Image (cartoon, rainbow, N blue to C red; front, side, top):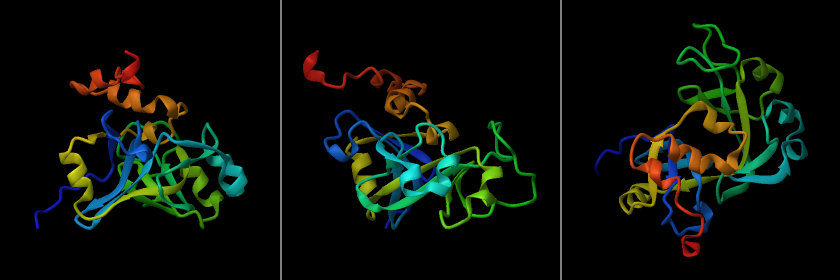
Amino acid sequence: MTEVSSLTGRLLVAAPALSDPNFDRTVVLLLDHDEEGSLGVILNRPTPVGVGDILASWAGLTGEPGVVFQGGPVSLDSALGVAVVPGDEGPFPGPRHRPGRGEPVGWRRVHGAIGLVDLETPPELLAPALGALRIFAGYSGWGPGQLESELAEGAWYVVESEPGDVSSPHPEKLWRAVLRRQRSELAMIATYPDDPSLN
């Protein structure tokens, strides 16, 4: 079996031709990617459900919009917290934790300043370190080799993530915004019409 180069921490941006309605115009943050499969969350699918309706203790720590996001079609009854904890790896805004103190309690680094939150942790322990938090219902998952097949078919564009992607205050504009910032022909795809038949 060929070794899989990890895409953990990168974004999958749905190509306009991707026909699966679960992923139409989505931006997926990969939280785990190896030879055993891939797991991520859709960053631009807000639901009408407020975080306070299901996780009241975390509601004050989430940014706008303060709603739960649909992370994907798998396990919609489970909640996943993704947070940016500004630290020593880059010039990110927000409170910093001091070098040498390790990661904040209840947070596990995924890539750079982005990590997973243990929602069983008392929020007040994590609050001082948080730069941004988003709550997801469900996740997106791929079995071994499945994502690689979809990439080979051209279903996804793989691009670098930025910490601000996790907490974009305008998730409905994220697909175009991520494509537009690329320094390649991908920037042109941001202008692709929502419904090509109307052209």
